[in-house]
Length: 98
Length: 152
Image (cartoon, rainbow over all chains, first blue to last red; front, side):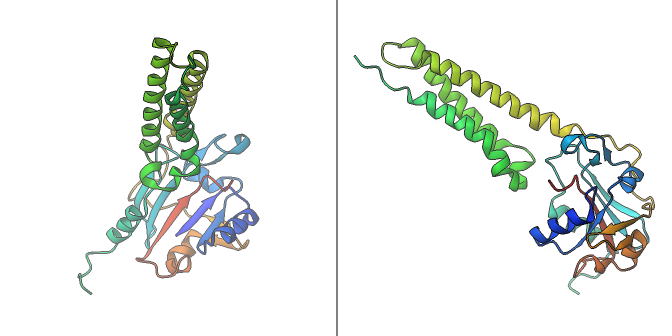
Protein backbone atom coordinates (compact mmCIF):
# COMPACT_ATOMS: atom_id res chain seq x y z
CA UNK A 1 0.00 0.00 0.00
CA UNK A 2 1.51 3.27 -1.12
CA UNK A 3 0.06 6.74 -0.71
CA UNK A 4 0.77 9.71 -3.00
CA UNK A 5 -0.09 13.36 -2.47
CA UNK A 6 1.24 16.80 -3.34
CA UNK A 7 2.39 17.43 0.24
CA UNK A 8 6.08 17.84 1.04
CA UNK A 9 7.86 14.87 2.70
CA UNK A 10 8.07 16.84 5.95
CA UNK A 11 4.31 17.47 6.04
CA UNK A 12 3.71 13.82 5.16
CA UNK A 13 6.05 12.59 7.88
CA UNK A 14 4.24 14.62 10.52
CA UNK A 15 0.90 13.40 9.20
CA UNK A 16 2.05 9.77 9.40
CA UNK A 17 3.39 10.23 12.91
CA UNK A 18 0.21 11.87 14.07
CA UNK A 19 -2.01 9.11 12.70
CA UNK A 20 0.35 6.20 13.25
CA UNK A 21 0.60 5.23 9.57
CA UNK A 22 3.59 3.04 8.79
CA UNK A 23 3.19 2.42 5.09
CA UNK A 24 4.99 4.34 2.38
CA UNK A 25 3.80 7.89 1.73
CA UNK A 26 5.24 9.48 -1.39
CA UNK A 27 5.44 13.19 -2.12
CA UNK A 28 4.68 14.61 -5.55
CA UNK A 29 4.98 18.34 -4.78
CA UNK A 30 4.94 19.38 -8.44
CA UNK A 31 2.18 16.90 -9.26
CA UNK A 32 4.33 15.34 -12.01
CA UNK A 33 3.20 11.77 -11.40
CA UNK A 34 -0.32 12.94 -10.64
CA UNK A 35 -0.34 14.63 -14.08
CA UNK A 36 1.14 11.54 -15.74
CA UNK A 37 -1.78 9.54 -14.35
CA UNK A 38 -4.21 12.33 -15.41
CA UNK A 39 -5.42 12.78 -11.85
CA UNK A 40 -4.76 16.50 -11.41
CA UNK A 41 -7.60 18.41 -9.81
CA UNK A 42 -6.77 22.00 -10.69
CA UNK A 43 -7.54 24.42 -7.89
CA UNK A 44 -9.10 21.62 -5.87
CA UNK A 45 -7.02 22.17 -2.76
CA UNK A 46 -6.93 24.82 -0.07
CA UNK A 47 -6.38 28.32 -1.49
CA UNK A 48 -6.82 26.99 -5.02
CA UNK A 49 -3.83 24.68 -4.89
CA UNK A 50 -3.57 21.97 -7.54
CA UNK A 51 -3.98 18.58 -5.91
CA UNK A 52 -4.68 14.98 -6.83
CA UNK A 53 -8.24 13.77 -7.15
CA UNK A 54 -8.91 10.72 -4.98
CA UNK A 55 -7.98 7.57 -6.90
CA UNK A 56 -6.76 4.05 -6.24
CA UNK A 57 -4.86 1.71 -8.57
CA UNK A 58 -3.95 -1.90 -7.83
CA UNK A 59 -0.89 -2.98 -9.78
CA UNK A 60 0.24 -6.60 -9.95
CA UNK A 61 3.85 -7.76 -9.79
CA UNK A 62 4.22 -7.51 -13.57
CA UNK A 63 3.32 -3.82 -13.40
CA UNK A 64 -0.12 -4.32 -14.94
CA UNK A 65 -3.07 -2.36 -13.57
CA UNK A 66 -5.63 -4.84 -12.29
CA UNK A 67 -8.13 -2.69 -10.41
CA UNK A 68 -9.00 1.03 -10.53
CA UNK A 69 -11.26 3.11 -8.36
CA UNK A 70 -11.95 6.61 -9.69
CA UNK A 71 -14.63 8.00 -7.44
CA UNK A 72 -17.01 10.67 -8.78
CA UNK A 73 -17.37 12.29 -5.36
CA UNK A 74 -14.79 13.53 -2.90
CA UNK A 75 -16.78 12.00 -0.05
CA UNK A 76 -16.94 8.52 -1.58
CA UNK A 77 -13.77 6.42 -1.38
CA UNK A 78 -12.95 2.78 -1.83
CA UNK A 79 -13.98 0.76 1.20
CA UNK A 80 -11.51 -1.63 2.82
CA UNK A 81 -13.53 -4.68 1.78
CA UNK A 82 -13.45 -3.57 -1.87
CA UNK A 83 -9.69 -3.24 -1.73
CA UNK A 84 -9.24 -6.61 -0.02
CA UNK A 85 -11.43 -8.24 -2.66
CA UNK A 86 -9.34 -6.63 -5.40
CA UNK A 87 -6.22 -8.07 -3.77
CA UNK A 88 -7.86 -11.49 -3.52
CA UNK A 89 -8.78 -11.34 -7.20
CA UNK A 90 -5.10 -10.81 -8.01
CA UNK A 91 -4.20 -14.28 -6.88
CA UNK A 92 -4.53 -16.99 -9.47
CA UNK A 93 -7.20 -19.35 -8.14
CA UNK A 94 -5.31 -20.66 -5.14
CA UNK A 95 -6.48 -23.91 -3.57
CA UNK A 96 -8.85 -22.97 -0.79
CA UNK A 97 -8.28 -24.18 2.72
CA UNK A 98 -4.53 -23.97 2.26
CA UNK B 1 -53.71 35.18 28.42
CA UNK B 2 -50.05 34.41 28.17
CA UNK B 3 -49.13 32.79 24.90
CA UNK B 4 -47.38 29.43 24.90
CA UNK B 5 -43.77 28.97 24.02
CA UNK B 6 -43.64 27.43 20.55
CA UNK B 7 -41.63 24.29 21.26
CA UNK B 8 -41.87 22.80 17.74
CA UNK B 9 -40.16 25.80 16.16
CA UNK B 10 -37.09 25.54 18.35
CA UNK B 11 -36.90 21.74 18.27
CA UNK B 12 -37.12 21.82 14.47
CA UNK B 13 -34.48 24.52 14.17
CA UNK B 14 -32.12 22.66 16.52
CA UNK B 15 -32.50 19.46 14.49
CA UNK B 16 -31.62 21.31 11.30
CA UNK B 17 -28.54 22.84 12.96
CA UNK B 18 -27.58 19.40 14.25
CA UNK B 19 -27.96 18.06 10.71
CA UNK B 20 -25.67 20.80 9.41
CA UNK B 21 -22.82 20.30 11.87
CA UNK B 22 -23.00 16.54 12.39
CA UNK B 23 -21.85 15.57 8.91
CA UNK B 24 -18.35 17.01 9.16
CA UNK B 25 -17.98 16.40 12.88
CA UNK B 26 -19.39 12.88 13.10
CA UNK B 27 -21.09 11.13 10.20
CA UNK B 28 -18.19 11.61 7.79
CA UNK B 29 -16.25 9.06 9.85
CA UNK B 30 -18.40 6.14 8.78
CA UNK B 31 -18.62 5.11 5.12
CA UNK B 32 -22.28 4.20 5.49
CA UNK B 33 -23.27 7.71 6.57
CA UNK B 34 -20.52 9.44 4.56
CA UNK B 35 -21.05 8.12 1.03
CA UNK B 36 -24.66 9.23 1.12
CA UNK B 37 -25.69 11.63 3.91
CA UNK B 38 -29.00 9.94 4.70
CA UNK B 39 -28.62 10.50 8.44
CA UNK B 40 -28.32 14.24 7.88
CA UNK B 41 -31.21 14.27 5.43
CA UNK B 42 -33.31 12.49 8.05
CA UNK B 43 -32.41 15.17 10.61
CA UNK B 44 -33.30 17.89 8.08
CA UNK B 45 -36.59 16.23 7.24
CA UNK B 46 -37.62 15.81 10.89
CA UNK B 47 -36.51 19.37 11.64
CA UNK B 48 -38.48 20.73 8.69
CA UNK B 49 -41.63 18.88 9.76
CA UNK B 50 -41.36 20.33 13.29
CA UNK B 51 -40.64 23.81 11.95
CA UNK B 52 -43.66 23.52 9.67
CA UNK B 53 -45.83 22.41 12.56
CA UNK B 54 -44.58 25.30 14.69
CA UNK B 55 -45.19 27.82 11.93
CA UNK B 56 -48.72 26.57 11.33
CA UNK B 57 -49.40 26.91 15.07
CA UNK B 58 -48.02 30.46 15.12
CA UNK B 59 -50.05 31.62 12.16
CA UNK B 60 -53.29 29.71 12.75
CA UNK B 61 -53.48 30.26 16.51
CA UNK B 62 -51.49 33.45 17.15
CA UNK B 63 -53.54 34.01 20.30
CA UNK B 64 -52.19 30.71 21.66
CA UNK B 65 -48.65 30.40 20.25
CA UNK B 66 -45.75 32.77 19.88
CA UNK B 67 -43.31 32.78 17.01
CA UNK B 68 -44.79 34.33 13.87
CA UNK B 69 -41.75 36.49 13.20
CA UNK B 70 -39.09 34.43 14.95
CA UNK B 71 -40.48 31.24 13.43
CA UNK B 72 -40.29 32.69 9.95
CA UNK B 73 -36.69 33.72 10.53
CA UNK B 74 -35.75 30.29 11.89
CA UNK B 75 -37.42 28.61 8.92
CA UNK B 76 -35.63 30.86 6.43
CA UNK B 77 -32.25 30.26 8.09
CA UNK B 78 -32.92 26.51 8.14
CA UNK B 79 -33.86 26.50 4.48
CA UNK B 80 -30.69 28.42 3.58
CA UNK B 81 -28.61 26.00 5.67
CA UNK B 82 -30.12 22.94 4.02
CA UNK B 83 -29.59 24.54 0.61
CA UNK B 84 -25.95 25.24 1.41
CA UNK B 85 -25.44 21.67 2.67
CA UNK B 86 -27.04 20.17 -0.44
CA UNK B 87 -25.01 22.40 -2.75
CA UNK B 88 -21.82 21.33 -1.02
CA UNK B 89 -22.56 17.64 -0.71
CA UNK B 90 -24.39 16.95 -3.93
CA UNK B 91 -22.64 19.38 -6.26
CA UNK B 92 -19.29 20.73 -5.03
CA UNK B 93 -17.82 17.39 -3.97
CA UNK B 94 -18.62 15.96 -7.41
CA UNK B 95 -16.67 18.61 -9.30
CA UNK B 96 -13.80 16.26 -10.07
CA UNK B 97 -11.80 16.16 -13.30
CA UNK B 98 -12.82 13.40 -15.72
CA UNK B 99 -9.34 11.84 -15.78
CA UNK B 100 -10.11 10.51 -19.24
CA UNK B 101 -6.44 9.89 -19.94
CA UNK B 102 -5.78 8.02 -16.71
CA UNK B 103 -4.13 4.60 -17.10
CA UNK B 104 -6.69 1.89 -17.79
CA UNK B 105 -7.22 -1.66 -16.63
CA UNK B 106 -4.76 -4.04 -18.22
CA UNK B 107 -2.27 -1.30 -19.07
CA UNK B 108 1.19 -1.08 -17.59
CA UNK B 109 1.33 1.45 -14.76
CA UNK B 110 3.65 4.34 -15.69
CA UNK B 111 6.82 4.15 -13.61
CA UNK B 112 7.87 7.02 -11.38
CA UNK B 113 10.38 8.11 -8.76
CA UNK B 114 9.16 10.06 -5.75
CA UNK B 115 10.46 10.84 -2.25
CA UNK B 116 8.90 9.00 0.63
CA UNK B 117 8.12 10.57 4.01
CA UNK B 118 11.77 10.23 5.03
CA UNK B 119 13.04 11.92 1.88
CA UNK B 120 14.25 8.64 0.33
CA UNK B 121 13.59 8.30 -3.42
CA UNK B 122 11.32 5.37 -4.24
CA UNK B 123 10.47 4.00 -7.70
CA UNK B 124 7.37 2.06 -8.66
CA UNK B 125 9.62 -0.69 -10.02
CA UNK B 126 11.20 -1.09 -6.56
CA UNK B 127 7.82 -1.24 -4.91
CA UNK B 128 6.69 -3.91 -7.36
CA UNK B 129 9.84 -5.93 -6.73
CA UNK B 130 9.21 -5.94 -2.99
CA UNK B 131 5.55 -5.28 -2.37
CA UNK B 132 5.83 -6.21 1.28
CA UNK B 133 8.25 -3.34 1.86
CA UNK B 134 5.31 -0.96 1.98
CA UNK B 135 3.27 -2.90 4.45
CA UNK B 136 3.78 -5.93 6.63
CA UNK B 137 1.85 -9.03 5.66
CA UNK B 138 0.86 -8.04 2.15
CA UNK B 139 -1.93 -10.29 0.95
CA UNK B 140 -0.66 -10.69 -2.57
CA UNK B 141 2.09 -9.63 -4.90
CA UNK B 142 0.70 -6.26 -5.77
CA UNK B 143 1.02 -2.57 -5.05
CA UNK B 144 -1.96 -0.42 -4.20
CA UNK B 145 -1.36 3.20 -5.23
CA UNK B 146 -3.59 5.56 -3.33
CA UNK B 147 -3.73 9.15 -4.58
CA UNK B 148 -4.71 11.48 -1.76
CA UNK B 149 -5.99 15.01 -2.04
CA UNK B 150 -3.61 15.93 0.75
CA UNK B 151 -3.49 16.46 4.45
CA UNK B 152 -5.02 19.65 5.74
